Length: 160
Ligand code: HEM
Image 1 (cartoon, rainbow, N blue to C red):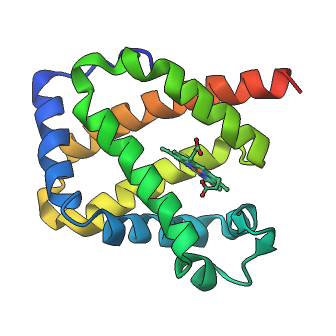
Image 2 (tube, rainbow, N blue to C red):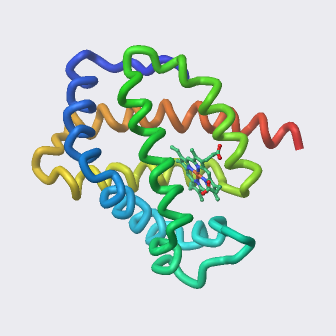
């Protein structure tokens, strides 16, 4: 991922807030995806394990296979938070991840909705401790992540 212009204070805000949320990644990940499915209900259809579609967001959110995806998303964010000093080292991985999601049928706009849902989950998890400054820092970090995944998405599209 390209370098993101974060000040030392912003990096600290991100690390601090993530340390709290990451104490229970499954819970906060479920809050994130519940919000995502409220905003974009059609995304549920893209999660198919053993070629079976879920009947509802509730079914999807209760599935152990899907919960592995929640874990994967939280791990990617955790990796980014632990790599704030060298975000370009994640470039290749995120390009590959963008390509993979293009093949699955995810649209780049949905990556942006995941970002909004992440802010929602942080807000719910941290309450008043989630300051405007912290929110801005997270927006910068997540935007960088989406930008790189979207480059990979575009490469996947062009390779079709
Ligand atoms: C926009 C909504 C998204 C949808 C609908 C979606 C859907 C999927 C699906 C269907 C898979 C394959 C099955 C699985 O591994 O469970 C997958 C894999 C994965 N997703 Fe997502 N995803 C989304 C967003 C994201 C985001 C934002 C991240 C990371 C920040 C992410 C990280 C991953 C990872 C790490 C894998 C495993 C890739 C691998 O096997 O190498 N996903 N996703």
